Image (tube, rainbow, N blue to C red; front, side, top):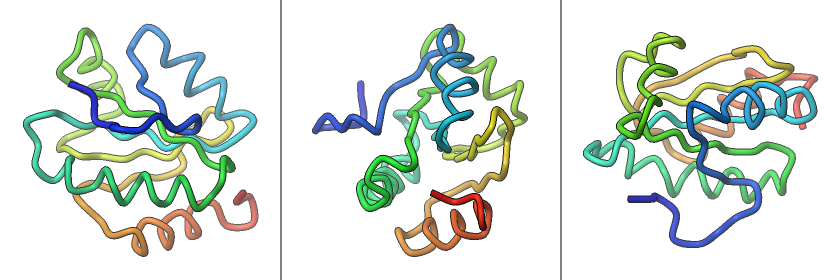
Length: 123
């Protein structure tokens, strides 16, 4: 099951086999949030509309990659990045993990967190 009801060009699903290109390499040109989520996870579903609104407000300056951990080999990525709970959101910029948070947050909290982690490098 996919999370998003309406397509947004700045929000996309990513799988293990495309993570290097769609997230790591793409983060060289613009920051990418990766939402590690699971369909059975209530807080994951609660977080999604807030993430979507933040991405819309940034008007393409930040992208959101949704990675469902229960699909295919995606759990390997969760293990690689030491994700311990869901949802976990990791900010990638210039190919590196710049910060993360776990659990549901409000739109305001997400924007504040992004400003802290992007600082002068922000979009």
